[in-house]
Length: 318
Image 1 (tube, rainbow, N blue to C red):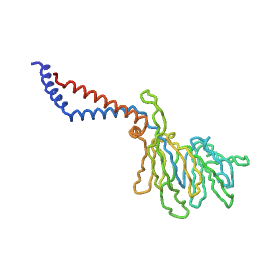
Image 2 (cartoon, helix red, strand yellow):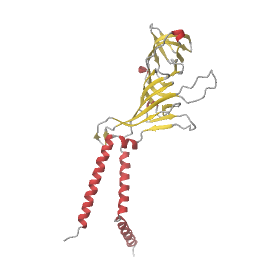
Image 3 (cartoon, rainbow, N blue to C red):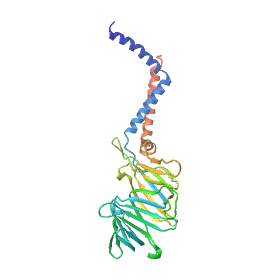
Image 4 (cartoon, one colour):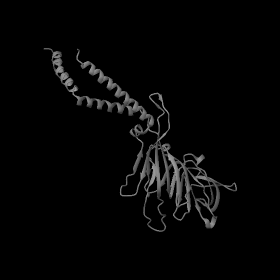
């Protein structure tokens, strides 16, 4: 007997056993489930990366950012005390113009006083102030603007910008002595998470738009920022900060960062992460939900016709 004949004799029983198993309902269900799972995984693989929009509304005692767009980072102040690393303190009012790449920090303490710190190690300094009288005041590498009603009278800052990688709040800690500033905490807030509906899938044009995913309450005493491992441009926040009628600063800012980190007080030092996954996108995007409903309906119809065809084949001939 040739090897080919032996192989055929071995295959025939295996084929018969497989056919016997396939005729069992449970085997068919398992095979259909596996096929559906593989089809769903393939469907997820064809989707573009999620494009989230996260909107933060909070009250905090401190917020800071690195300027990524100097054209929109300027803001007007009045009645603040300016101190730089190369000039004596003086009361000033005018337009603050931080330079690209400089860091800007806003802080409002429990006493209600306001402090703005602008710093940069880049050549040319942190920026400048165009005063109300037309004079230009360089900020040097480190400058502070502090409210001092006794020396400068009432201060006024309507709102201050956020445009760049930002942090809201800081780590909760104790105050060891009176010379150390009290921690500037994130007091309260909420984070609304939105997704953007895909506008094209496999060449099919779809209607874009925003859809809501979830809204989270933020714990007090921590801070929020985009993951620093992301490319710098993906860490940007945009929005405004203004002195709140209550203590602290009111923040209204948004970001498209695909990954946020929320540091919370407590024994767990690891941050909480917020991200919009492809699976979350597939369950919430109205366009994708519609595609899945149509696909599911098509599968049910095909299975129904297949079952009817099977019944016709089994029907005995009269």
